[in-house]
Length: 533
Image 1 (cartoon, helix red, strand yellow):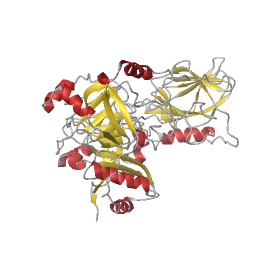
Image 2: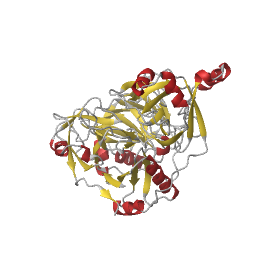
Image 3: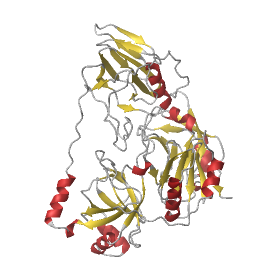
Image 4: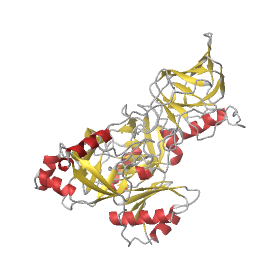
């Protein structure tokens, strides 16, 4: 057992194999450790995210090393049958790679009972272990930019089903009409860790059974209730580049493959809520690069925090004047608030007194742009009803805006913690990570900042890394050697090595870095793996 640093509040436990991983996971779930907030299991690792005020690395290492991993975890009693149409575009190629016929590949794939080892990559994406021992195939050399929802695929010794259309590098051997992820179900993820799974060839089913499957797969559109029109509301005149509802996220959903998501600048979101008298975990509007125009319906109170952007208030009569950030603003009926283009930072947060009357999804009103969980992006004409003001809520005094927001005119420095896979890179790579400037490319978004440097980071270990948990702030390095800094909507697990992670105290700062800015990384401690005493 080896312990690899991930950040100041996370640790990666590396184990010998999947059986040990599942045994440790079962032990930690049965007898939780104080201060541990989230466990993200993978093929041979468990990402342990903890609260530093409640526990530390030394205490966690001692406690985990004392756990008994000799007991093999038994499969659960729930058996899920997944009907498959074996028509995948990689079916013939995979059969040829294994030296068997496509029919034999289907026979082997349907002839075993699988177990859900862990869930990751995307909501409802289950890594299924226990298939025929010969079904061991590499990922595709070049991942596809789009794999359809319901694709049944192989990678390494695992089978899996893509719950929604997404990029991916697994080998596709078929498709299923069964929904792996459905937010309208009480438990959206069909497959849970420990469930047993059997694949069934649709071609062997009766015509009536096939017709029933197709009917069950037809999706009923989700009905969205119209906002209450009687109370105060904000109407979107223009949404800007992208405006989303974001709160502090939905932690604790790793078992369904759902990352926490939430506001990229959590401090700015909390402050906006405090200024209007809301609870700190209420939802704000997160808007990128200005352009958002909101019209008050009835009397409302709002506050804008985050990026340094000009604010203009226009009355119903047409008079306009500038208004300050980081201050509660009383809007009369018909007043319009306009957020201009930021001169520093990139994301502004708008809180409204009472909070937005939007139903939570999995306990949060945040929009996860990768997982497609939560409310859609705002569009012109949308009306956001406001909830009644809670009794005793006090509007906060004005605050000073933050200084030194990230901009284009000077390098943005982020503290980083080396690990967990620093030793997968050449000795020069960590030095280059800190020495070289990295430009934020236009391909960046809420999933991550795609960075470009003059020299790529070189790996010392070229073999494929089994998928493992990745926290917000992870600096993942794909084959190109150009890193990606994961932000709030990143996948729960990843298959490229992480050379370092942004320290928690600089995550809000990372969420404010604009496109084309230059970033430098500052390692704040050396990389050091720990073993059991």
